[in-house]
Length: 347
Image 1 (tube, one colour):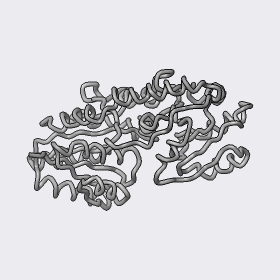
Image 2 (image 1 turned 90 degrees about the vertical axis):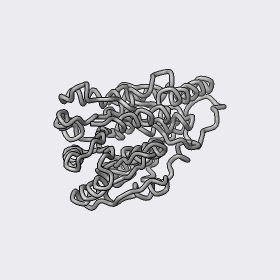
Image 3 (image 1 turned 180 degrees about the horizontal axis):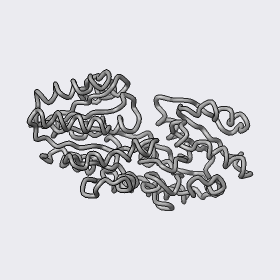
Image 4 (image 1 turned 45 degrees about the horizontal axis):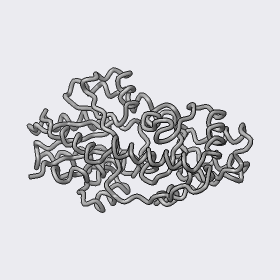
């Protein structure tokens, strides 16, 4: 018999948080009858495609009404939330309905330190378990006063599906570099242009950037001075672009996790990331990818130059190491089992 589980999302988009909600409920399908409650957006189509029910919530009132309807039918349902107000209101509704279901607050981080981490301590007295998706996220929660006993680290993972894989390297050196990222200030995509302007020799590399965001116009203007950089905007299926690359570059120094890194691991594409944030936690330098000094364009440029001359055998070793890390540390069954244990925990 499956146990009901309602998963509240603050956004109806299909970024990392929403994709992980769909992946988590998909992985828990054998134990839990999942329901996604989210604002309008593409996450509902993704849920439907995965065989997961969803409720379109228009505003906070609509979200709480959707949860109340669910709890009136399944008062002992587990509840997963992603926003502080959702957790406060959702925990209250669980108690008003006489429910004993667990409440799990999933912390993916974000672009605002106060909103992403600073208010999470308000949940400490409500018997709410907080899931940090990386050690970096855990460290930020601790820095803002969330008790260690309230936090559990459960990594993101990829749904069990065949990845589009890159062929093994036959020729030395990286030539095609791809970035799959939002073009927002915190992502530091401009660091690439800083590196290009400071490091002679990088003109031999081709850089393809996929994504949209607040800095799109600024970055397009900078790209006009660099014929080896192309900005493609948002592309629905960027997996094909990833599999056609020699390297995935990630520049955000405060990334809470970085699901695209796991996608690169699965595709056999080496990765280069800052030595900070969740990305720095995920990637082990020289084992399953490489680090550069965060926010340092000179260090980024020099690392890219080194990779341009990297032997194919070494590039293949890194790709093999990345696949091993994916199986060892980010196994879907293992992470889903931890979520299932949290969802079973009666409050």
